[in-house]
Length: 363
Image (cartoon, rainbow, N blue to C red; front, side):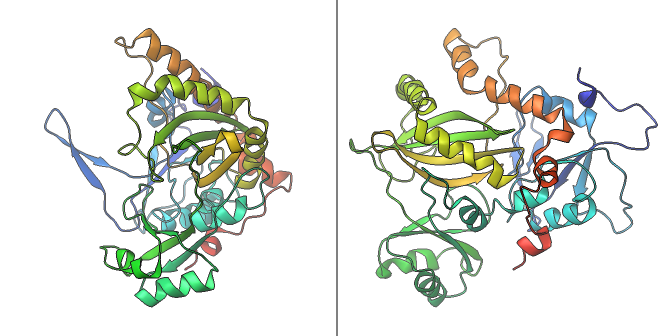
């Protein structure tokens, strides 16, 4: 086993840390297991491939935020930041940055995670050649007039997308096609909370299909993890074409993306702008027109699943080898070398200059 991945000897004064947190709102979901016991579901944590995910608790004990007032900061040779959503874990990211941000190697540095907030991410990725990055503005949805004011001051045109800031799912996402539809966004359970307003960019292909690719970025390299297809602009697990009927086409499209010079050039420019060790980007793709539309870019993506089940077919094993294993292997290799972690490397070379989290995430 790599030295970094070996358990720390008993009695050591410095222990690695897996930094965890409860969401700022103090709420988590609970799932009932087959054995009848409840399990807390902590949302939007960084994706970690197996077997590293199983090994990590033995390598780096968890430190949970918020901690008691009597907590004394411990020394650590390195930290992995499991908090992957800048809105969900704003307080935790600010604490981690203030406590360790300038002194300890951190895998997915809190300032880089802060920069994945949808409005900040859109700003950071503007100008990447070959990538269409819709404008995005963050505002407080305190009234109908607040939506209209954000629309006017942001220079938006209909249609626009509005959504509550918390969470990474499509829950609460609305497409507003005209001024007559603002009530769709006003009359919701999230009214009064922080929202994003995003420019809508149509990515429909000539045949009427909508294709969305998920691309993973690890240590300066990118990997196409999957492609989903739908009949409308909102493409996710519930609305996408059934996987069994699309899987052959999916692999064909992955091969085409991997061979597409415009797509690869755009992806090659992303890592230096994020300074993340790991993140994923969802992209609307229209290969015939070489149009690639960025939807989101963050570390809160479900992309790694167990690949060693005995009941797996040869076909599933082949797909795993194409779509998951290369990224998982690069992830584990990169994780084993803290001196190469993105923030430490890019900051040392003067390639990033993000403000502290308390400034980035000030409201």
